[in-house]
Length: 97
Image (cartoon, rainbow, N blue to C red; front, side):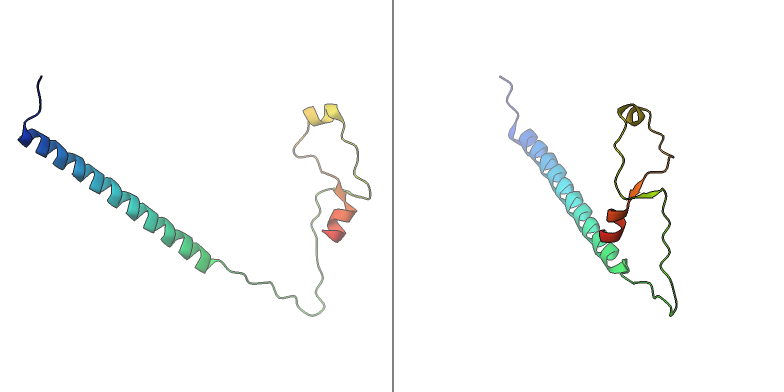
């Protein structure tokens, strides 16, 4: 059959080695960039806790009525649930929470 000549095999092997080296280099560069992004994100995150002034009060913005027992869900209402409708907030979740 037609077997590649030694010179042709050397050219194809060189091209393959070059592609492999390029792929490895790009993978390493992307990995190092990912590590840098994660490191910068961790360093730039602020864990500052807000300072409460003397006489300050905790203000909660509750988006629904506060109930002691959660209401039983209506199966038909779940099918046609309105996303903007206020959701009942269970008092136990707010106090213990």
